[in-house]
Length: 431
Image (tube, rainbow, N blue to C red; front, side):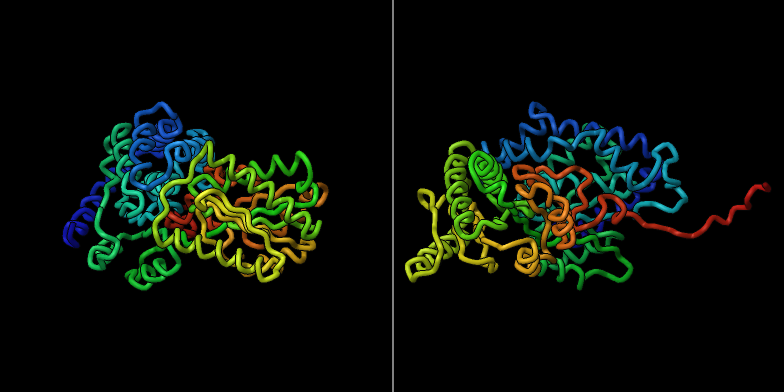
């Protein structure tokens, strides 16, 4: 693909958008509800094909991929999509005055996908269509499967909508093709902070950028969650959170903070997590690890081993062949997170100490799984929200955000809309 073909696709889509903008929103919504329901159904042809092809392309173990899709899509229903539309845009029956009103989509939307987890790609491809904005999408290099299958599923349900969702497959390092793609009126981009900075610098004047950058998540356990059966239960749930997508998603926990109970409570938690991760490996095996990532993880395991040998109050729990690792730290200091089922457990004295410990991560904080705070749960949740977390849930639910999750603190649809606050110039009827 060359810059000229990307520009031609964008021009063609802009023309298709003229017809799209004449369609009632209710009609478009019905079609996209059917698309979502098809993706939720484990027996659907689209879901089966995604499961069979994505494992080979991304390296996720099939059982782990299947569980991740089941949990991640369980709440992404047609009614959930309708609820998001009504919550953010208002009454569907009023059609949001979309043809000549205050909320309307852009003439074209470019979507630059990243990562290997399919749910964010699915949502990013469908949402501009609800605003009657045609989409030209660049598939993620780590996931060359999802975008094409989503486009096919839309076309099968609604051929005209399918004409308004096209793909521009070119290497990520092709600056000329990227510049052509950035001519779209609205650009939705996912990726590292460095990648998003490059896109923002290259964006022509007058274009809208909706950026989804690097994010991380954590778990926080109060003393009530660090003993007996409760600890076993929450450790198993956190092991699931870390095992799904091999800890590579923005909602995968990179660390567990144990509030109160001192080092003893942290060590109990680390031991329980080690047992739970060992069991998780039998149900949801770890997938392929690239050489650089494997080397980074091995390095951090060796550093933990050396620190313990040098007398630091650090303990290491390690799975066979390094398939998982848990490091019980002596303090709350942030350390490298090599991912691929590598968790650190940190002791903190109280919620005030937790706030100080997590504050450096706040700009990138996506989710917090929390338990064990009893009557202090509300205060804990308010703290997590102040730190920037937009998905606060129980352990085991990090990988199941609702469809209307305000990722990066943003609504789902409104960032993709052109908002016009002009007051109507029509004469008002006499009272």
